[in-house]
Length: 111
Image: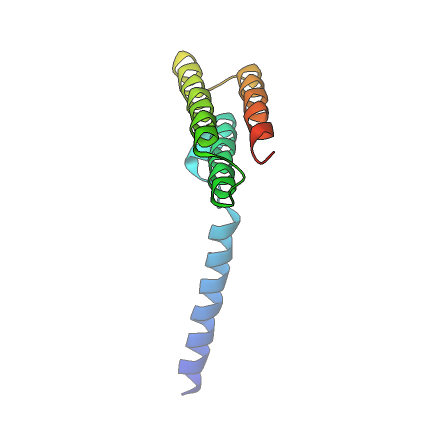
């Protein structure tokens, strides 16, 4: 009986250690390989959520939402184009330019 309890405790302890190791390295392969693209795309996703929330709260009209989403789509297409030209990566300058464009769109959300 004692052996069974010790085995259970050992297995649970091992599971906790392995679980914490996995969560500590939660960075995906994509994030490691393309950190600039991941950052830009994450910002676009966050802005999309903000647009949806502001529309739900009545802060944005349907016309404004369509315009802002169009702007975000244009930024995403530019990011895709830049990456296509650079073997799947974007340069620091391209990331900066995309972030500046996102700042402009973000400033229009929830005014």
